[in-house]
Image (cartoon, rainbow, N blue to C red; front, side, top):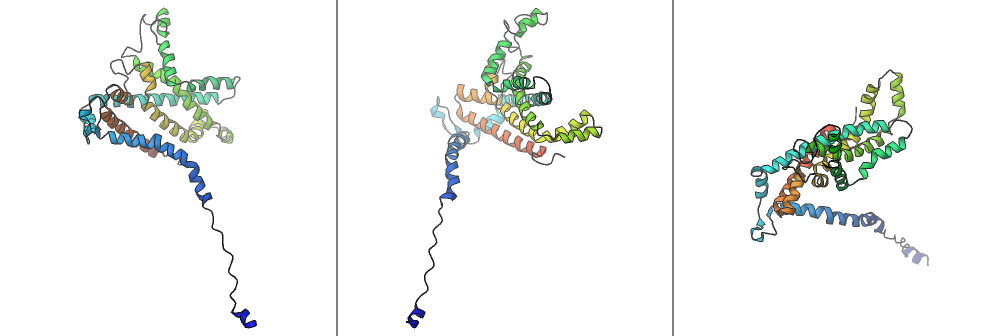
Length: 311
């Protein structure tokens, strides 16, 4: 019996349960619907545009459709002066709009950040234009610029200007008129972001600087601006991309006129694709616009040192 017990094998260790892989896969399963939607509504259209940029594709002229290679890009850069005109105006529009919106938005944010009676109402009034759509903004300003019932008539009644003047049909006034309309809607965007960042600035910094004898300008330069740096960089970048792609406001307000004075590159692309049905060339122009925006965005973030030290 003792020998048999010695020969007997020790009991086998209990089998370890196989760990379930469900918890590991669960995060991927949860984000899968959103990822599929992004693939369907963002990635596929972008790749489709790149594909058609290398094609001659016009549904009204199917006998000309086919692979074009780089012919569409050569046409844009070498044989289409309207491309350069619209690109130049787009750059002018972005620089003027974003610069003016930043200045006015910063000023408004500094004002409504102060303590005064009725501050909540003032903030609501300042931020309300941002909730208005681009088409509705255009409709409002078209009425304001109307030569019969708009502001130009009241100016003429006061002896400033003449009756029947339309700022949107005059090449010398259409640009500042369009800029003013878009400023009304774009300034609150900067004011909202800058005000949110202003409220996070520690008050002790201002008190210490005031004790040291720093003036308001010095406090603004050495405390406020460095703290707002990332917010300003992000806001200007986002707004620059949106203004470059601005179609709804300018299309509704001026239609790109008069005489093409307010035609941006995206508006030219929309006309080329929708009106002329030249989807291949429009896709090439869209690809060029995408590369320009990508390059400028990366360069701007590098030069501004976004996310780095503000000192």
